[in-house]
Image 1: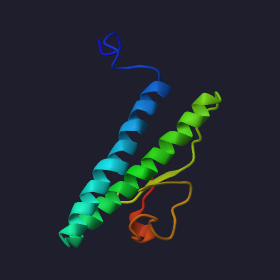
Image 2: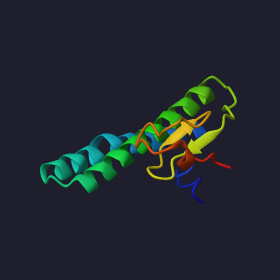
Image 3: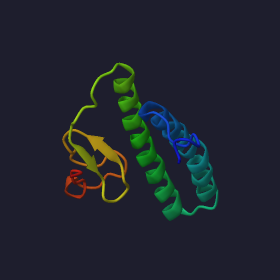
Amino acid sequence: MLKSAGAIQSSAENLKQILMEEWEMCLEVFSDYISQAGAEDDNAPRIAFEWSQGSGESLSDLFEEVLQQLAHDHDCDSNELHVCAICGCLVKGEAPDVCPNCGVNKKLIPAVE
């Protein structure tokens, strides 16, 4: 039903749509929220929005990489993926010593199973 309505398309087309929406959220919405929280000198929301923006960017980077692989008819890499338990930042490969987004210790960046 969704496919016939045009809501579900090819994997590449679906990823492109998600990528556009994610970048819009990261670049426009979170930037506005960060600016507003900064203008109000309210650090807790500002930090939360900055972390959300950073995790959205890491997700967008991952989607961009998958799109490139699909465009060249390559299978998607099956590298290990880690997600920061604090901010949601995605990291491919081995977990870093600290989250590149929020700086939390490696212990809170578990592998996705």
